[in-house]
Length: 497
Image (cartoon, rainbow, N blue to C red; front, side, top):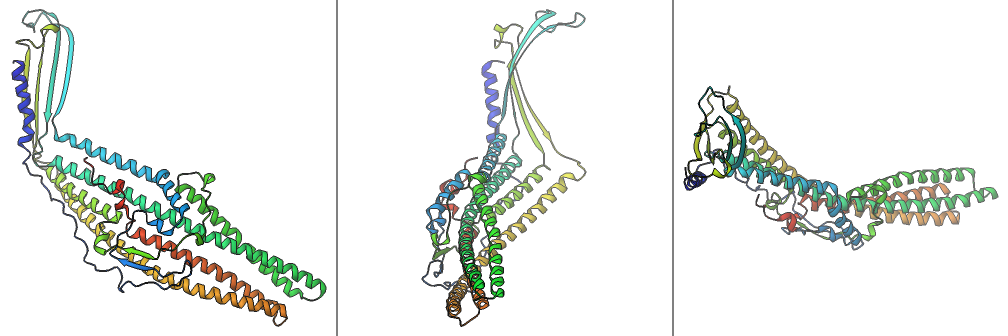
């Protein structure tokens, strides 16, 4: 066969895939789940929280239907916090691992797409042989000792008659989308964790400072009491009570310092550092501003924003594609093959007239009996789809629950801060009166100790209530999706895979 005829045969073979593009893909075509019909997150309509004009106690307004910004944490107006977020997004190893997993998933899709095209391989063999004199010589020259050189090209192709290849690629694409949203979930969790950790640090720092001030105050008072006891102006019961109070307050300090150290270690890990390389920033709740206008996405938009919901949707898509894969495996499979080349005893005679060879072939295989394995595999795929659908619905419900719980928490946080602030103000007035009466000799020292203890606890309660309100504000941004869709590197359309 001449080279022109060989080339024409290979071109015809390579064009065969185009003739099969109109073939159908068995199995269901995936349809995105409809948005839920829920009109709101909570049974009661959203309303502004309680609050005053004092820092950390302001009224918070909910802007229903507003969008979340990509850098929502800047609403706390803390430059050190913004810097920590930037560092964590650059250095956090969990985020880097999730990004690498996404790259691997996309490369697997690209690799699987290779089945759309014919497989072409080239080979060259060279051998020296001696033929037995008892059988006819192989070569036309009747030589029994000869060399043989054979270059050839082989082509094989599996036409996607029933869509097995397309469903397989579709499945891998859905898996890659699931990995993508898993990476986005790592991103949203990371940013929220950095904010909450900073808030907790600020809360603990204020509690530590307040406790140390009380320890100094109690120690000074004990010193005065001991002096008065020596002079006969105070009783031993007063001294013992003050020593007990000082010991009790001092005992509360080590746990607070331990929690602070653990939070700083956690912040170091979140930003990709070892604990001994923890960031030097010291946070104080007074350095953070409470976001007063909070956007709340519409319920219909939540399912398009929450990465866990989108990941569950991708899992549902994958399960749908696998039904088609299982069904296609029960149908006939066609393999087309071709080869062409030249064979000669001398190198310079290759590709000359009379040395060429070629061949075309087609194989069809169809499963006849597999002991019911293929049937049950298809049924298992359908059951897996039902499972994925129920998991998707459960994830949506959990997402709505997260938002509803956080909205309710913010409303009650405001009430808790209001009550804690009122209690702190009242305790401070009571302490001032108790100190004045004790110095004037109108009341006993036990009453003063009780007032000091109430003042200490009220300060700590107020700090804790404010920290909870800040943390729940950050949790709401996370529950609504975290605004990732405004980041170009995360919201980009699906890459051509």
